[in-house]
Amino acid sequence: MSVAGINDGGNPAADRSRMWLALGILTALAILAWFTIDGRAVLPVKEYSFGSFSFGGFGVQVRVLPELILGLFAVRIVTANMRARIESRSQQ
Image (cartoon, rainbow, N blue to C red; front, top):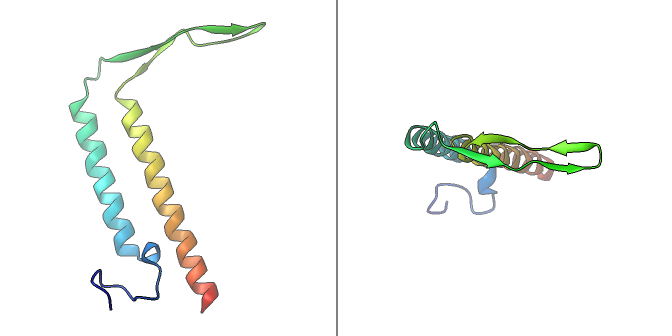
C-alpha cells in the first residue's frame, strides 16, 4: 500500500472515491464562482460577417464562463476515471 491508500501497481485515476472527491471540489468551486461573480456583468461579442454569414453582436454573461470551464474539467475527470477502470479490467 502506498501513502495515498491505493495499490502501488494500480492506476490512481481508477479510484472512484478520488473521482467523487474531485467532482465535489469542482462543485464547491462552481458554487463559489456563481455567487461571487456579478450576474449583471456581460462580455460583449463583436459582430463579424463573412459574406452572407454573420456572427456575434450579443453579450455573454461573465458568470457562465467559469461554470463552463469547471464543467469541462468535470467531463475530463469522469472520462479519465472510466478509461482507467476499463484499462485495469482489460489487464486482469
